[in-house]
Length: 464
Image (cartoon, rainbow, N blue to C red; front, side, top):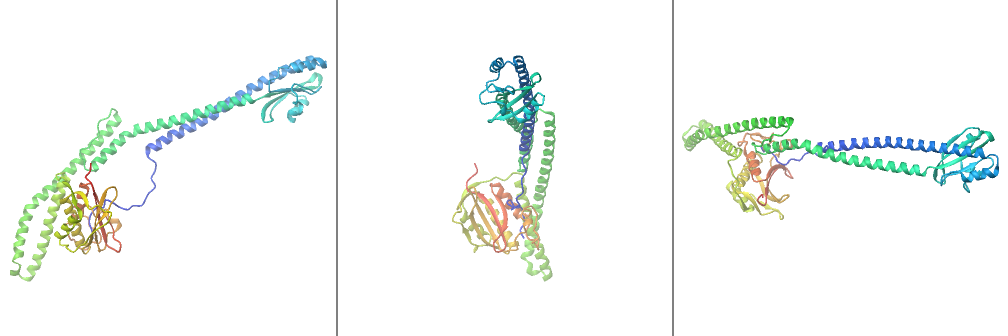
């Protein structure tokens, strides 16, 4: 079994939702776009109806005026022809008279007007109808001259009106686009401004989580934000007070236990030295006492070390060291003289680290492998990512369940594979704490072929 906390875990990738600021920005943009499109459509329809109605009214007035002039000139053919030639017909328009058949533009006569319009006027009504001729839009107006049972038709070009409507539509669309962009930018800037206090809270919470318990929020010039800052600071004060009280308690207890444990250890060692003078059953009881007292002594030492780390009383004395040589010396010190140290060809042989912390890390991993994995199989140095090197200790034991790989690096945590309470339960916690202190990380993986593979990541160069 292996105890502790894993800094690197393989999790299932989950679909991440959009950030709040992005959603706010999109909301502003979508609302502005919908409002702009709706306003554009409404304005265009109103402008179109208004322009067409004005054009229709003007065309109808002109057609009736021209029809009256024709009626006054009827039935004198000469005068009627002169009137037709002098009619104020628009440049691209044309007119025609059914009886006699006269027209104002060569090649454009009655046949160019829609059948429905001609039929309606012939039946004695005045009417108007839009139609296309050679790809150009026209408004046709027909006036029935009842006194002579004839009809006057005039075609008014709508190209200018259509061009005006296209210009209006283009202007409205450009305006809607600019409005949408402005609203999107406004939403983005507003979301950043509104979410800035939350970012400050998140930064302060992150600082506290990383160990900076004194991080606090500055007061803001807003009553609501002041309330948020005040509540957060009160919570942070309470958390800091509790953590410091617990840290002091653990440290005080460890210090108070150190003296009696030292005395008890000395007494037990004296008894153990004279074990041959004791009966066999007493020797068995003495063995239990000796093992538990030594375990208790190791636990107190580990607790004192963790208390110093929590209190920030330990410093990092980093230097560039030869990793293979240091690994071999630590392995020899822990009775693993035959343990191979394998070096990957791309792994750095030198790294910036604290020798004492490295010895503590590797020593704890070797003890963990001995207690729970049947002993370490090998030590390896492998290349890491982004200027790091990996120190790996592998064993052939039962391995670590995926659900326990993060928990086993916690203090006093034990995995389900631990059948015996061997060790203090603090070894891997110290591994993780020392790795983080030098800017590294620690985790556990499955070893190919069975067993566990404990990995500690170290920076190759000193942090800047």
